[in-house]
Length: 221
Ligand SMILES: O=C(CO)[C@H](O)[C@H](O)COP(=O)(O)O
Image 1 (cartoon, rainbow, N blue to C red):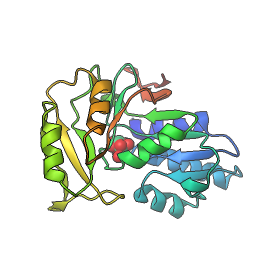
Image 2 (cartoon, rainbow, N blue to C red; image 1 turned 90 degrees about the vertical axis):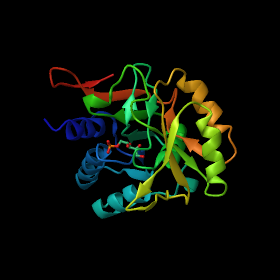
Image 3 (cartoon, rainbow, N blue to C red; image 1 turned 60 degrees about the vertical axis):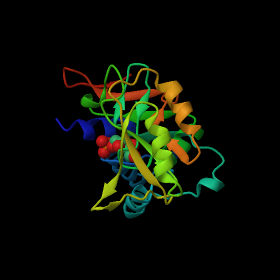
């Protein structure tokens, strides 16, 4: 079973209605949601999107999904996105694709936020996946030192041998924790460090999770 396709498509079928403004996430799972939304538009529904990354913007444009400028939308009815890990309290780590800032901004302002994940992303405790933290380039090594005080090992993300630069012109520091005990407190503390723009912890934001159970059945939690 292609779990990513199954959960991604289900999200569109379950939640997307005519007239909606939809926050379009980033990644290989929500890709299937976006393709499904394009099908719905071809079949006569009026749907517009706001994109969480340049990658998604390009995908949506190529599929004929009308996109809105985030500064002009009155309301985002729903946002649908993938995640790298999600726990039973629906706390998630996102940013594996480096789009965490725009993803969090759009999720925060959406009336509903739905996460689509294959079964491997469901964990009892967050921290198996390194936590991405977006930082401004100015003083980034000092910002890294401040982040390390939270007990993690840090690596500046690279792409093709060069520093990875986000859509916002920033760097990503991936933070490896052996245990992440208090994600909510950690998220707030990280954002208190000057130079940190945003971190990949999504706390108290997710309304529903679509995943696959042990019997290969797509479920909505
Ligand atoms: O946060 C993200 C991008 O910044 C993605 O949603 C996350 O990395 C999951 O991606 P995929 O569905 O490809 O596994």
